[in-house]
Amino acid sequence: MVELFLLIMVTVAIASELGLRWFLGFGNPPLYVADETIGYRLAPNQRTRRFGNRITINQFSLRGPEINPDPAPETRRILLLGDSLANGGWWTDDARTISAQLQERLGTPDQPVEVLNASANSWGPRNQWEYVRKFGIFGATEVVLLLNTDDLFSRQPTSVVVGRDRSYPDKRPPLAWVELISRFLPPEEIPELAQLRQEDGDVVQKNLEAIGQLCEYLKAENVSLLVLLTPLKRELGEPGPRPYEQKARERLANHLKEYGITYVDVLQTFNGLDNPENLYRDTIHFNASGNHILTELLRLRLSNLFKIQF
Image (cartoon, rainbow, N blue to C red):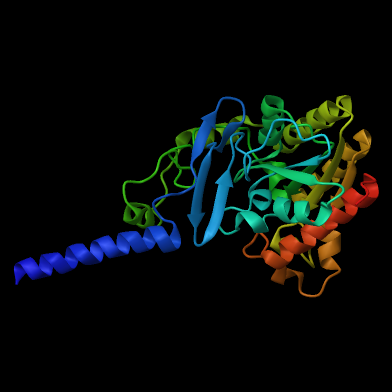
């Protein structure tokens, strides 16, 4: 009787472990690596599947398939820089990311287009600029910087979260059950993060400076830049952004105006729609409908402002 009970328990444990892995993707999370200048980035050369969504990271920590450093002569490249909005995270299949959809809508048989996706969860302008400094822009003729309001307040790049914050694992857990249980445990305190917050000073200014450095770099390369700012869900309607957020938005707009950069504030567009709150999957990230609208906004701006003929 005891032997039968143990056999049943072992069978259930094995079946549940396999189920968590095959159907939900637990036990094989996207991994991160520490980076001295960028802070952290997705580990290169990995493939996984989470909740049925395929996640592919190539040799340059870009979300998507492997690429050649330089595009084919007939191919036009666009580089999308962003955070989890651009990346899509575990909740977005490779084929449904903004970059993949934009590539599909812009490309034609006569003019192939590649849209590269340089992004990671919680990246801000300083992470994005350091990524470009390290890896370049891969022969892109246009760069899109996709920001949300919180990015204007993002902290300096740091690698202290890698392998310590459960959202930034650097190795796979021994069992899928281990990862699942960890999701219900209190997050680990990381004292270094509190210290970094105290030392950062005017974070908005430092992020604007990073954007300015990106602008200067792209100008020297004769590459066009489009900056698109998305709102948090609570910024929709009235009363709108909080005073400090509105001030940061104004500082960004003025900063980009000095550089002559094309700037799109999505808040105005969303407020002109019926029930724009239905475009969000949470307080920051967009669902499939929201991604569709952002992709269309980018397609129109790239086609019209950068005179891409498709």
